[in-house]
Image (cartoon, rainbow, N blue to C red; front, side, top):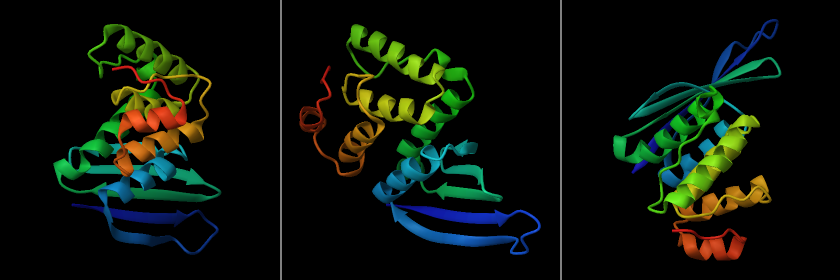
Length: 177
């Protein structure tokens, strides 16, 4: 189970370096997920294309344009595609009213929807996306939690495959499921 990752950087004129391939590598699903969250969501990349087997992103900073491609089987790409789709919707303003349905508890879904909608309205789509994924595992959204704490909880659950209940207990996130 691997995901192919390509990273190209284009330098703006008058820089004469043009475009260079910075990375072309195979990543484990966990490595790809961690890189995607820290680099693509963390730096506010635009989701240019999302298909079941491929995600293309683009970001610009300091006269360069970075283009990333993550590709793999539908099974390997499923979590990345879900996160990219949620993030893209939040960035486009479609997520101002987020409807969360990841729990069997109607009250939890309502509270999570309100919380995620507030984050999206505050133009914080990366944090809203992380909370969305944590809430899918039963973590009660809390506006007092710092982004770093939410990222660590996300990482422990989705990348390190730790039990969500244990992670929530350690991080102070209330468990609702």
